Length: 360
Image (cartoon, rainbow, N blue to C red):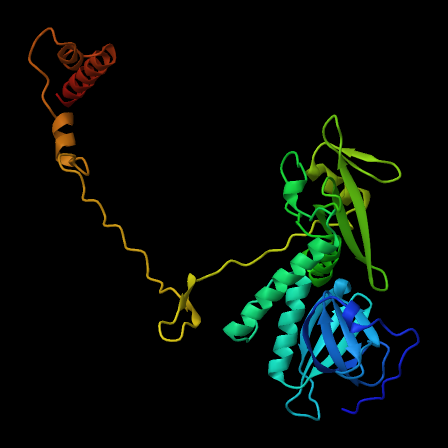
């Protein structure tokens, strides 16, 4: 891939001495959203931005890319003239920037440092060595310290800094404004509205995303009322009793266009643990063996209780003789003929006598 000559832009960036601390640097081929050809630039990850220089010895950068508008970072499988080169695509809110690293290892390192600075968390899915993961941990701590020092009076977004009342909706996320936009951009199928802490740490905010020739984000302030409940601070404030009512009100006002953001995060299927090798001290991730649960033995049937009634016993009960006592009511009932029986007997006798007379 041919590199186009770099033209020094008017009003080039300041000297390196005034930049944030540099966490990683090296040559990358870069092609921005409006650029037709790639350029080979010395690239430095300083703080939360990428700075580009014509070469490694230049004192002033020629371009800067702020990573606060980060959306995604993915590998580019298209081939390059240099078979060892590895490409990746950095997607920002204002477009995509394509990079080409010298090899696969360099690409993994750039991804690791970029993710660590953007998310302030070490990614665990990259093919890196233990020592390289340790470098990323140190970068995360340095960047956290730098941001706290830069904004000492700003409370970090945390659900604990907001005195929430009642049940918290499942679309609540303890993220910043930028992180909320990134979440909604990355997972459009999971909803387009989430609840988050406000910048001041004393209020809440609702961030929404919709498509209108691109992503359109809106942020609504939600504050607690002294008399209880919440209010959505718009031109005509909307009072709500609970945070669930806040979300329901926005869904209703938009005729269902806004839907709560519900991201289903998978759970682990196996138990894993980390142990150190006794010989070289290298840490290895192990999967614990899984064994089926032991079967509970069936309880034996209780003794002394028949499982079924004997039909012979029933017959004995039904055919048992009636006691011979004359005063027994059952005996009187059986031995005493009813009036209907007496009438039938008399009619039968008369009929037999008539037949006998006719035969004689």
